[in-house]
Image (cartoon, rainbow, N blue to C red; front, top):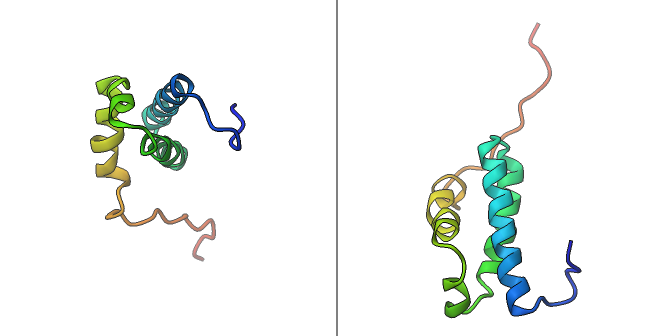
Amino acid sequence: MANPEKPLAEAALIKEVCRRIRVARGYWDAHNNAACRRERDRALALYNTLTKDQKDQIPQVLRVWLRYRSEKYFGAHQAPSKKKSKRHAK
Protein backbone atom coordinates (compact mmCIF):
# COMPACT_ATOMS: atom_id res chain seq x y z
CA MET A 1 0.00 0.00 0.00
CA ALA A 2 1.25 3.47 -0.83
CA ASN A 3 2.60 5.77 1.85
CA PRO A 4 -0.29 8.17 2.63
CA GLU A 5 2.10 11.02 3.49
CA LYS A 6 3.80 10.94 0.09
CA PRO A 7 1.67 12.34 -2.76
CA LEU A 8 1.21 10.00 -5.69
CA ALA A 9 2.30 10.83 -9.21
CA GLU A 10 -0.41 11.41 -11.81
CA ALA A 11 -0.42 7.89 -13.27
CA ALA A 12 -0.10 6.27 -9.86
CA LEU A 13 -2.97 8.38 -8.50
CA ILE A 14 -5.28 7.36 -11.34
CA LYS A 15 -4.30 3.72 -10.86
CA GLU A 16 -4.95 3.95 -7.11
CA VAL A 17 -8.41 5.48 -7.63
CA CYS A 18 -9.32 2.68 -10.06
CA ARG A 19 -8.01 0.07 -7.62
CA ARG A 20 -10.00 1.47 -4.71
CA ILE A 21 -13.20 1.61 -6.76
CA ARG A 22 -12.71 -2.01 -7.82
CA VAL A 23 -12.09 -3.05 -4.20
CA ALA A 24 -15.27 -1.22 -3.13
CA ARG A 25 -17.23 -2.97 -5.89
CA GLY A 26 -15.86 -6.30 -4.69
CA TYR A 27 -17.07 -5.57 -1.18
CA TRP A 28 -20.40 -4.49 -2.64
CA ASP A 29 -20.77 -7.79 -4.49
CA ALA A 30 -19.91 -9.63 -1.26
CA HIS A 31 -22.61 -7.67 0.62
CA ASN A 32 -20.01 -6.22 2.99
CA ASN A 33 -21.54 -2.75 3.27
CA ALA A 34 -19.29 -1.32 5.97
CA ALA A 35 -16.10 -2.17 4.10
CA CYS A 36 -17.66 -1.02 0.84
CA ARG A 37 -18.58 2.34 2.34
CA ARG A 38 -15.07 2.79 3.75
CA GLU A 39 -13.34 1.99 0.43
CA ARG A 40 -15.85 4.08 -1.52
CA ASP A 41 -15.16 7.08 0.73
CA ARG A 42 -11.41 6.65 0.24
CA ALA A 43 -11.81 6.33 -3.53
CA LEU A 44 -14.10 9.35 -3.66
CA ALA A 45 -11.64 11.46 -1.65
CA LEU A 46 -8.86 10.61 -4.10
CA TYR A 47 -11.18 11.04 -7.09
CA ASN A 48 -12.07 14.56 -5.97
CA THR A 49 -8.38 15.54 -6.08
CA LEU A 50 -8.13 14.70 -9.80
CA THR A 51 -8.36 17.24 -12.59
CA LYS A 52 -10.99 16.90 -15.31
CA ASP A 53 -8.47 15.37 -17.74
CA GLN A 54 -7.36 12.86 -15.11
CA LYS A 55 -10.97 11.95 -14.31
CA ASP A 56 -11.52 11.21 -18.00
CA GLN A 57 -8.78 8.57 -17.78
CA ILE A 58 -10.79 6.59 -15.23
CA PRO A 59 -12.92 3.97 -17.03
CA GLN A 60 -16.52 5.14 -17.38
CA VAL A 61 -17.93 2.02 -15.70
CA LEU A 62 -15.95 2.81 -12.55
CA ARG A 63 -16.86 6.51 -12.60
CA VAL A 64 -20.57 5.72 -12.94
CA TRP A 65 -20.49 3.24 -10.08
CA LEU A 66 -18.58 5.63 -7.83
CA ARG A 67 -20.65 8.75 -8.44
CA TYR A 68 -24.18 7.52 -9.07
CA ARG A 69 -24.99 3.94 -8.16
CA SER A 70 -23.16 3.90 -4.86
CA GLU A 71 -24.51 7.35 -3.94
CA LYS A 72 -28.00 5.84 -3.99
CA TYR A 73 -27.05 3.43 -1.21
CA PHE A 74 -24.31 5.27 0.67
CA GLY A 75 -25.23 8.92 0.22
CA ALA A 76 -25.65 11.44 3.03
CA HIS A 77 -29.43 11.02 2.88
CA GLN A 78 -29.12 7.43 4.15
CA ALA A 79 -29.38 6.73 7.86
CA PRO A 80 -26.30 5.09 9.38
CA SER A 81 -26.59 1.37 9.97
CA LYS A 82 -27.41 0.20 13.47
CA LYS A 83 -25.66 -2.68 15.15
CA LYS A 84 -27.94 -5.51 16.18
CA SER A 85 -28.09 -6.28 19.85
CA LYS A 86 -26.89 -9.76 20.81
CA ARG A 87 -29.00 -9.83 23.93
CA HIS A 88 -32.03 -12.04 23.74
CA ALA A 89 -35.31 -11.11 25.38
CA LYS A 90 -36.43 -13.54 28.03
